[in-house]
Length: 142
Image (tube, rainbow, N blue to C red; front, side, top):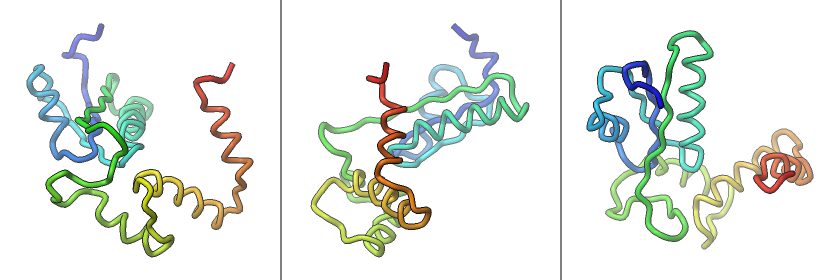
């Protein structure tokens, strides 16, 4: 258990909300530190962890907090807010559709899959190399 007084920085990941870092941390008394809100689709939690780690590794802070918060509906992440209001993904759709035709599959899977296809085209990455990355990162790996 860490005394919250030791926390000097927080990175909070949330896909569709603004200010969720403040909304999540203020009620538990963490409010007098820099709080960065991260939005990057399925990589949001990883981005929050990366930012918190970088703050410590760079010697800027000795103790940093990484948090991920999300309220999701069952099923595939569709890429938009239920009320149709703007999200941080809106411009991604145009980029995706300019590079690849949008299919009926869940859009988030297409965002990341097509990023892999773009990487393959730009750097010559092979399917076998992606498979090796998946194998290395698998929780089932012994």
